[in-house]
Length: 249
Image 1 (cartoon, rainbow, N blue to C red):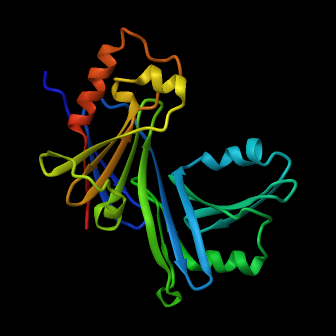
Image 2 (image 1 turned 90 degrees about the horizontal axis):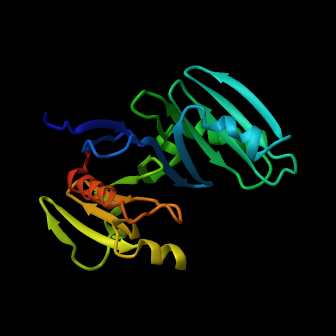
């Protein structure tokens, strides 16, 4: 039987179509994303996640805080503020995904909130939510966009090669097909650095091809690695050899 490569299509927050190929050894990933906007009188960061993530905010992050809900066509809006008013956030929640921006203080005045809502346009789909400048005349620029696949065993970040080239290492990487590959040691504490020394888990792997830049790490909790984990290390090698990503123009 021939192992099947999984072909995953995601939509980045800026509307770009991203195709990710994962070998059968890869774990199931939960997809998140991030994007930023900057312009006259407006600088905001937005985190995107599968629908339901915001439900933890009133239960664990802002217990006893303030919550307001507003219904809109195609999505709901949630306002959250901590009980001591030291932090707050605004959430767009669609049928499949949600987007959150944090204010780092009390909820802004309604005029500021309305300005935020009028500045961006949220649209949801099964492949991913988009968050784009709503009014071109406002002069907003969108940047820092990436998608993020997360599991307990693997974290994978995919970015647009055209805008993220300056984040690559200065030294030349190893050629692998149409990609250039680098390894960077993770910033591990003493005990974990010793435990993971000489294994694939002590590195961050970076792949750059003509359209995308991919970063992969394989998190390991202290004490999780055992001498008999050779098969798991081989699995990591198989994943690294089979991962591909295309960030469509």
